[in-house]
Length: 83
Image 1 (cartoon, helix red, strand yellow):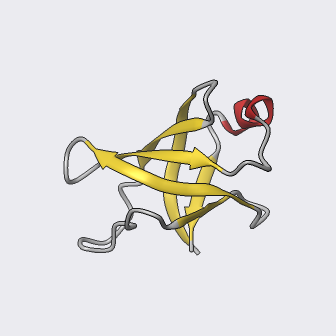
Image 2 (cartoon, rainbow, N blue to C red; image 1 turned 45 degrees about the vertical axis):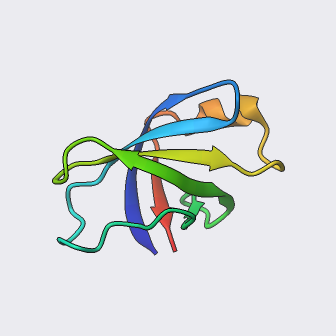
């Protein structure tokens, strides 16, 4: 597992905004549709887009249907990972 970043915002439509981790080596950024997991290795969604500066990008993550939107608020300020 590789670190994706920290959750900054959780929208009510099941979307998370994540500030990318600056520890990722150059060229090793996650691709669109990469699986996103929490610290317990539970799959919670997938990367749908990335934006912002190349050195520290931001990612949008669409949550899986099995993840409740209220549960998504528990991920605020938590670190998420990609496989």
